[in-house]
View 1 (cartoon, rainbow, N blue to C red):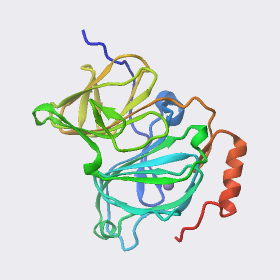
View 2 (view 1 turned 135 degrees about the vertical axis):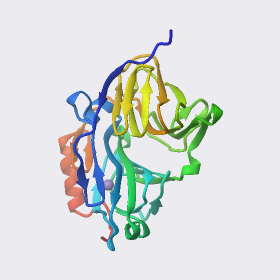
View 3 (view 1 turned 30 degrees about the horizontal axis):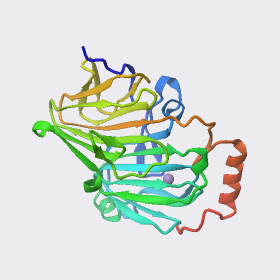
View 4 (view 1 turned 90 degrees about the vertical axis):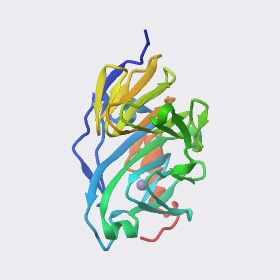
Length: 292
Ligand code: MN
């Protein structure tokens, strides 16, 4: 008999809300807690399930805003986002691409639908995950990792049943390109109908699975539908995903950072004093310059 990691909860998404005017996102609250309280080192997950944006002349999105103390990881499924930040980095995140931005000591950035996409409009689907940083790295130098779709680790499941694309960490010997500050596993999983994949993640890692598209049977006994999120218990055991139709999943698993958290808006620090300092530094222009 196969021993599986127990499912703690299958969560349906919250009502959606807009982030700026370009991201129509839902959230999940495992156990009624905030995502970050249950899923450290992951602090937040904004998921924009597929949504059709109408054409616009002025791209929709979020204007210049700061971040400090963590990383923002944007995973694009449909549509394109243009990004600019105060360190001079910029880029376009197209379907399949991932942007791993380490805000650390502080960054200003803006996130807009890419011009041509905005002009045409169409299907848009993305997830943004905030990955917290250990205290000793919170004030390190900001950086930016552009991970194009073909740069992800590509583990091919037998018989053409799909792929586990590794963004961070390692799956069956295939490594992901993202450099992380604490142990993080992040997989972009694509399964064809009846495709299966199994995962063995440490008991102490916090682990959850987002059904981006499709439907799955998890651990042979639990159905998870599109846009649901499966929270696993922290215990030994495998996770088995069987796609009941062609499906896409995002698997997050990481070693919890056992340090105090003080968070306010775009800042995630350890103490209230550090939050105040972040606000003062932002107001004082210490996050650099970026034109709107
Ligand atoms: Mn941001």
